[in-house]
Length: 533
Ligand code: GLN
Image (tube, rainbow, N blue to C red; front, top):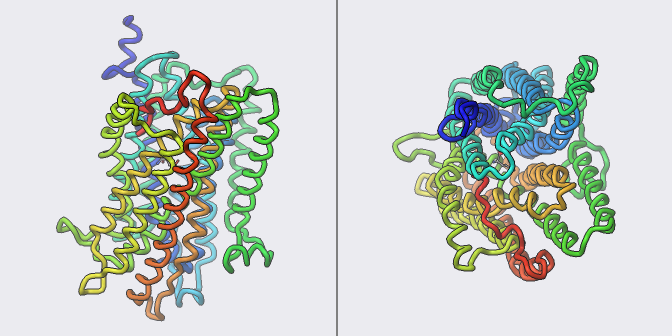
């Protein structure tokens, strides 16, 4: 190691890794703090009915996962990652601070509430700023991490491991702190705290950007004139305005409404379906564009995994919707001598990820050595079964309230443990599978497709949420027994959806394994994935 590299390193990794770690940690802090509060804020403060709350949560988070496809392309072609992160971070701070303007609380009752229309418009605009900000920041900060290491550098995997730990530390801290402050002291204070910490993360990124070793600069600096750069930022703001409109626009078309169980479909969902259809058409053409049979088999497997992941996230993301509602309305949230707020319960997921990740990093190589490493399709099958079972635990919980009519929080802790076991089988594995199964020249696009599936998952989650609508009494209280019956019923349905889809995946696993396997090779991504927490 020469002196120059040594001074640019800390604890055996490039200093730039820690710069990215902290930036993404505070970005996720803002993102997940917001997610923990959003449903509660919409239903308790602005008196949205449950269905509208779930659908807005789903469409907003869906957009935040769909836009990285565009943010990645813009940075790859013109802006470079460093500038994209700075711009995305700025939008995020503006969005979080915009959320801090809460205006007046709605008066009246759900369904007949008088809402503060200005505050609600500020909120939609703020959510749009955040979604576009995530689009610019999230894909690019991850790409920078990869670029800090020379090709074939064995430290890259552990670099990603450290980076993803940052994601979950940010998520855990914010669910604990932002939710607590937002629910107890005022919604706006919680959102503002997310914005302040994101701003500090951004200042940290600016101070540390010299450690990125020029790896995140524009690909063709002479083409990025001041005019082009200005136009990109202007486009970012125009996109924000479009997203502001899309986010709140519903489609008035009876057959679609009927399809969605009597709830109007949003323009966001229509845009997402159009993007997904475009992807499927492209895939169909690509299958016949001179690729080998093995490449075709692997791409088919990859598309199956991506599609199935949308269903997984649809069940998983209940944790920020129906699970929060269940915790708020039907649980005794005191345990360890602490009374948790409903939003704070979302921290259990990230905490379990931090606890389980090292175990899985040890487990996969061990299973692999004994020839017991399940195939990709089987892992995804187990992931679905586990997220179904996690929901099943909550179904049982809803049927077994204590003497006070409330359910113990331990059920939720157990459900999160099972849910995160499922996550470990799918989220890290899927990312790794994208890079190994994809034909190399379209890997960037397939990564975008992977996140688009998360976007679909968020929206599907919102729709599942509409099955769980519970209306408060005129005085704002809830009939707890009725709420528990509704949640138990929905969790029961999701249990079966997860388990049945998972069993189907296990059944087709041998076929998928065969088509993705070369004559002398193994299915590539049975290889140990260590690059994600
Ligand atoms: N929890 C991870 C993150 O926030 C991945 C979530 C996802 O892909 N849906 O980055």
